[in-house]
Length: 550
Image (cartoon, rainbow, N blue to C red; front, side, top):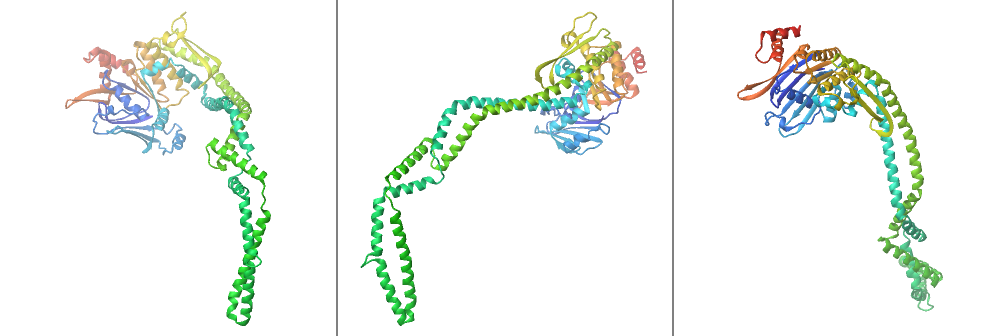
């Protein structure tokens, strides 16, 4: 329940601090006194977006703070999930800074508006005149039926399966779009892939081919140079090996005569061994050298193929061609496999759709089961509210379309008069009748949706006399299990409250300020007398007020 409210620097409110009790609380005041300002401030606590124009003094921040006693409402899980400290007396604070920025806190933990709205929806239901108009919307009517049917878990399951179904449908659409687009390019991509596959690409082969081409293309020059090298090594008279062998023999003899020539002799011997090895390799080169015009033609053809592919695909080396080949292979493969993927996706959709239909059927079944009860309870309450001939015709049509809350179309028809035609609410009910229907619905809902607090803002619009007494009785009955506020202009309703507050304006130093004050028994008599007869209170109005209060 809402136990305390503090408002600073908001609209016409300079500083307001008020404590509330449980039960049935009345708020009255003349039109324009500021009841809507009070509701506006409370709405900020519940997550409504802030407006800089709300600041009374634009040089100071606006602070609105509400204290809720939530010890008996099983909200610990919500606090834990959002990483907020749970307190039996929870304080929600909203600040609007002169810069226009807004901040929100729950038990001094900063939170965003989504969290504030989530918690607020569990704490208080503010019923405004605009909400009465929501009575004619299918969405609200479904909420009423689902509350009685206790469909929360079933609707959550349906919603999860609907999301999965929609996700798969999107994936199927993408596959079909891909297939349509890919088929246009498939033949060309297949041709390009075939070209690259036939090229039998190997990373690093370009360098090897170029080297082989140079060798084959210059075989005669190489042959000539190798022959010269052989002659230099092995010429009978002046060959390097012949001369070096003689030099080695000379130093071997010198080493025998004096040890100091031994190192040079060893070095000459080592050089001779190295050069002899080199000569062996030259001879091997000579033996391997082969003038092969056919191979030269093959290598040249392969190089031409590679260079043409480089130009065609705007790449510089074989590695990039290989990457391109793999990408084309994937595209062609995907195109060729997309039909199988489409069939597989359709099978997945069929399985999920079956579970979705089952969830929708469960929701539908439970809704159908409570409609007779809802109809009976509404009509019974409306009899007491002066609508003895009120009748509802509520029907559900299970269709093929998947809506966010099921597969049904709802027909919520109403007739206020005996023998009258059933019609949709906005055409069949007057403003006063809509207010009474909404109160009846709220009184039923509170049996199924456990909220700590409900606030009715002029739900008595369009009614008077004995009907207002009955409306007050219903609100008073609701207040036995929850905290109920009623902002009203009717003395019959005001008199039924356990606690009574008055909203009023006053001018202080030529500045208009809105205030809220709790009325004592004597002041309450005067307030209700003024509601009955005007500012000038007559003896009869006072007597009538006392009679209402008693």
